[in-house]
Amino acid sequence: MKLTVLGAGCWGLTLAWLLTNNFDKITVWGRAQDLSEDLIKNKHTSKPLEVQLDSKVEITSDLASAIEGADIILSVVATSGTRDVCENLKKAGIKSSQILVNASKGIELPSLMRMSEVIKEVLPDQSLAILSGPTLAKEVLAGKPTAACVASEDMKIAEFVQHACNVPSKFRLYTNSDVIGVELGGSLKNVIAIASGFAHEMNLGDNCAGTLLTRGMAEIVRVSINLGANPSTLYGLSGMGDLIATCSSPMSRNYTVGSMLGKGKKIDDILRELGSVAEGVKTSKAICELAKKLDIDVPVSNAIYEAVYTDITPEELLSKLMNRKLKEEERYV
Image 1 (cartoon, rainbow, N blue to C red):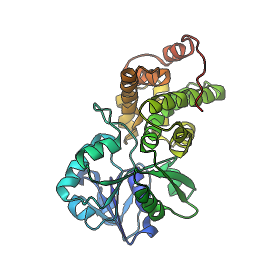
Image 2 (image 1 turned 90 degrees about the horizontal axis):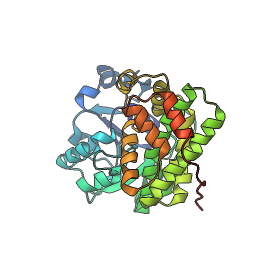
Image 3 (image 1 turned 30 degrees about the vertical axis):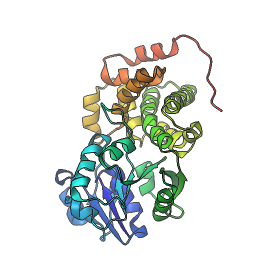
Image 4 (image 1 turned 90 degrees about the vertical axis):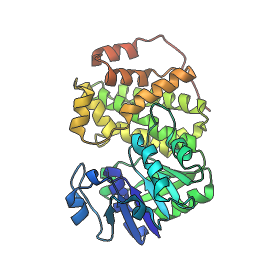
């Protein structure tokens, strides 16, 4: 079998490394400007993480040759580039029988569409699955175990990807039919991870961390249910599991963004210093627009939007969150 990974970033290269022994052939595609000489010649990169790929892995910027004969195509490009990549996949002759697995977590702006919606709009007949869960790349590269879920409207597709990409003792995969819930859980938790890094930098304590996780989770569930998700999905790997991992770890890019915001740094400087995509930045805008459209209250996400896009101080943000009108805690059964 052949696996093609679209996107030569941190998670894309990590997946190519992780799944090396599961496939006979592996190809990593990236834009020519994103492929370093070290990666092309030596199958090695040191930024943002050090990854050494097996010699059998092919690196290319030719999309048509990359997807030729691929059984599974893993899309790990930034959400802002997903539509363009799908348009190019159509031109490159992708077959509807080839399974496209999206592993990017975010919401397209300005359309406010989930990635599966974007993909289906461009490639309506494509076999499609979503991969999401607590998957911090640095831990995966260290051989530490984790689990994730593969969601698809077609359970035969989900099960095929599950068996093809499961790595014993390292990467355990579960299937799920709730594509909406899996996508929204993985996307919206990035905003709460920014809030968590922000709070940690301000030394607000463990009580505050627990508060942020639970109130952030309430926002994720509130929005996701209104968009058609099953609430139980949000308490699974792609929701609560991913939320706990990213809100607790400096290895999370979104957590790091929050930490730097807490130091008073501006977002443009942060992203330049980070050198990689932190999807929660744009997702903070998307969730606020979705919430406004649905008439839903999302105070934590609103606070992060303000932290990213305005000159509000950390102290002012904290005061706004803590001194809102008192309310009843909602419950989801």
